[in-house]
Image (tube, rainbow, N blue to C red; front, side, top):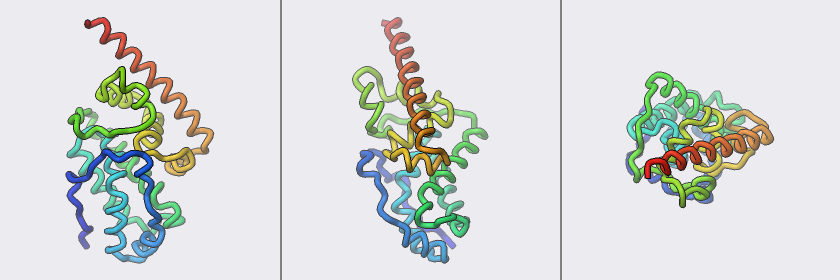
Length: 204
């Protein structure tokens, strides 16, 4: 079997959070779990962009993100029958596969590659709050220095546009715990960006 392939280089990562809400794919998931490859191809088309964007913000390298994303969907296709709840839990399950595989890849490579400017996401949230004072590259660097769970919350919340309930399902945490992580991450992010501003002021 060959999974239907979409040219991932053509995937745009400039959607706003409001446009990222995925349509109901529960029916497709049920068909795919029964072995319908065409149904999984439709799931692939729907979920490819957000999963690629999520991985890209973690690994910060386009080629690596492409490879990881393809691996994620292959893993999902092979294990879709094990997804408990099927249609209702598939998207959080897919994000967990993406997160776990991304963490494993980062552990192996132990490297960070800068993104080209045109690949950066136009995100709402903290990026808009600091856009007038900091470059997107500085924000990206600061986000990359956050602890893993805080970075994951920031990406899911402000890049993917998910709500706390959805994030909790992906991270297997209660909404209250997600809110605490988010506040800590934003506080740490602001501190790092403030230090960046101070360092920059010393250069001029």
